[in-house]
Image 1 (cartoon, helix red, strand yellow):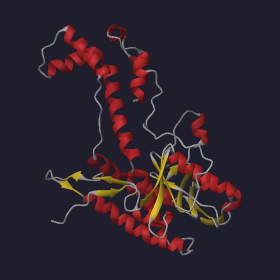
Image 2: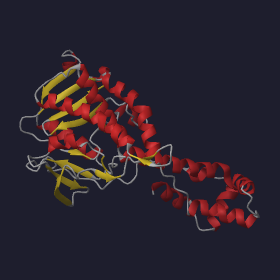
Image 3: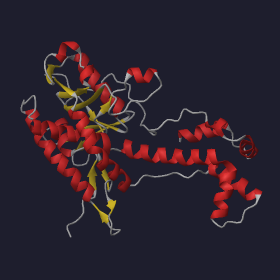
Image 4: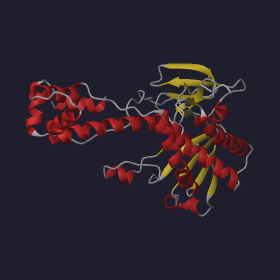
Length: 341
């Protein structure tokens, strides 16, 4: 059996090469920008065993990593065509680029962490809605000795020491496999705007594809996803950025130019591209060692949470169940803090 690959690139090595110098080194910036260092693209964005799954025989397998490598190999050819000046891309390479962008939207830690956080919130919500009555029934079904004191102790423990769900690589990779064709097609259906820079430089990040928030949805208190985003943005190289528009949202002066448009970059659009990169990053930014594309940006702290819960869940707890929590020193502020952890 061939040796399994354990060092998994969350951002493709071939892609990072377009932000690297001739020695294949990039400048890595750790958020919030207090640590910057040169790094080989062989080491940048690597996480050990990140895509290692447990197969049907119960053994560790790098089959998912090998499958992702096939998508990357096809995309690398598309990038070579782009770097050589080919635009619009032939359909085959356009499809390969769309598949890679879709892959980056689905493969990163943001997705896996979201899955874990949503599962944890669902467990907490189930406890809140079921209350001590449902907890008592669960304890009885498990054959546990049950009295009021025990139910109350377990009820308090659900909140003071809550169970944290964790999505495993198998869950993440199945989710990716299920959605990759649909997301790829969604991107193919968009109009693509390639912006080319002669002097201005672009950075990228550990999450190089940015789903630009839809302003109309934001005003209504709704979130933006891949399919309802007006624009999806990604830097392709240190000199090229790609904006993928819903056809109806293409600026009028560009719409008449065709499905895939090439446009010269200026200082303002370079700033916009790099702001998208900063907003999309979770922990790391990358750029060419000779460039300073992040100068002037106020870099954020590393993003620790992906899912925000705005509901006032304390009010969803039955009054007598709330009183047990209050008697144990756990109140609404503690619940709010719990949802932010």
